[in-house]
Image (cartoon, rainbow, N blue to C red; front, side):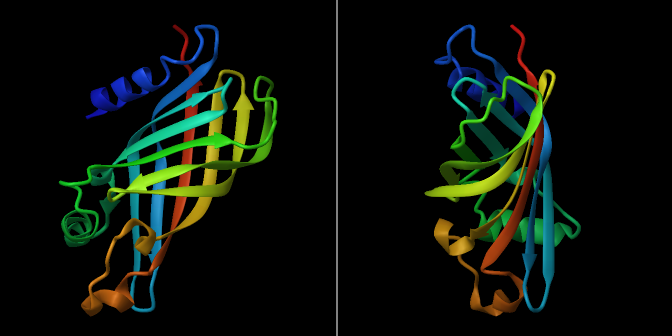
Length: 182
């Protein structure tokens, strides 16, 4: 799976000029948290690929849905089979561009907004959300916390578990990308 993800990023960034700086990562942390009246649900993925073009300020993230880990194996099974249908929709993809004119060629920490699409459960949604980008030498760190409405991605909640799953989940995303030196 990781080889496919790396191929995806290599192909995605081939259009970037040879002299452009591209940062890549195979790890990070994506956490989603559902705070419903009857239950709190948390899942974490640390297995995904991300790429960032310094010149275009473009970020691409590809997360295998089955990489999310739950404390309860039954929750994980229901998540993959009943809600996310990971056999049919195996990945979530974020593709966006930083809006601000920040100089990421120099070390520093910058509050930014990213505009792009989140494709999940077969549905693409245009989104803009806030985050922090930090440049330290040959490393760029990204962090963002945002909300996702399940209905926006046609993820339905059966009436029997409505009080156990929030209609809107909080997503925390963080990754550290290293300069891809050819």
